[in-house]
Length: 386
Image 1 (cartoon, rainbow, N blue to C red):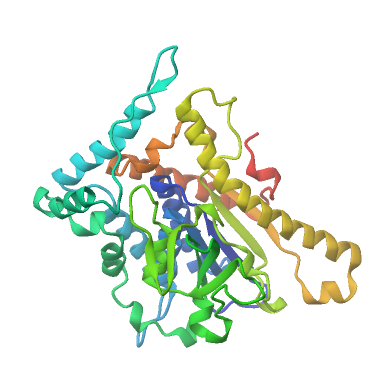
Image 2: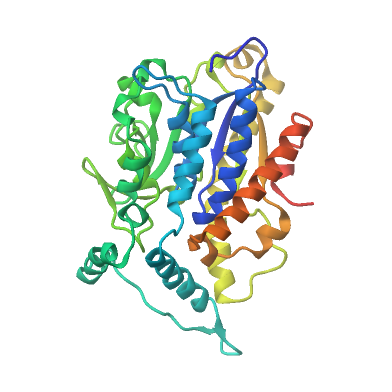
């Protein structure tokens, strides 16, 4: 993974968005393919929620283990195999998918004129009935790795404890939210390499932001939606989905990093559309758009600050320009028709047909984009549809 002179160093950010992240699987597959051909170096990858699962699988394949180097080919295989097991495969899983996704689809249907939704059911992940329901799933033909995120990650990353941290060249950032103290949290592979970077968020500086060592539990925390999974406990903290803080985390790729280590470009794989075709009108559309804005607006604050630093370097130069590098930010997004038709409920559709459709589109979009790169638009212009 060592870059030759003149090779661009790329950092990739994967947004969260449930099964819509299957689009990112296709995009990452094509990016890793071109990286393997030496067109650029993947210096870092980050993600939140389902985007964190994509980022983690790609990074794990690239990471060297004791006596075994990582590779782009391995990363592609691990990433796609993970998502092949993430979808509903058995009859029991297909029925469970229909129950969850189908119920959300029904809830999106309003009673005409009255604007009332009929809630189907809701289970508290901490409640006794939920635990009984989970205990019954294996007897119904549902694999444990289908509903248990920690089991799924352990199966996908069996050699995590054998990672050769000293020779890890690609950085990964996983976003999560600490619930009790309200801390923006990043599980950062650089902390595993340099323990002195550990920031547990209780110091005078960066109190509301913390960087912790990367663990599989941290990745599970990033995908913990409170309506479906009990808060992930790590040490003294309790963690939920990173959608509430960074979607995905990118600031750490640039803040406190030496100029020579800073990526030349940041590519955001966007699965939450920046725009809508019209104003939301129904309760279902309100929920959908609220979820998208929640993830997009936090990201824009970080991206806009990168652009501000670029302008300061141009305007002030001198020592400022000596310490920082101008960074090009770009967006890769799904087709407009697809983005307009997807809804909040489809983020929970774990059917193979739906996943394959989005994964194939991701590969098609990325292939066309990569064949034009670097002659493609930049952020913020490319975040929107024409």
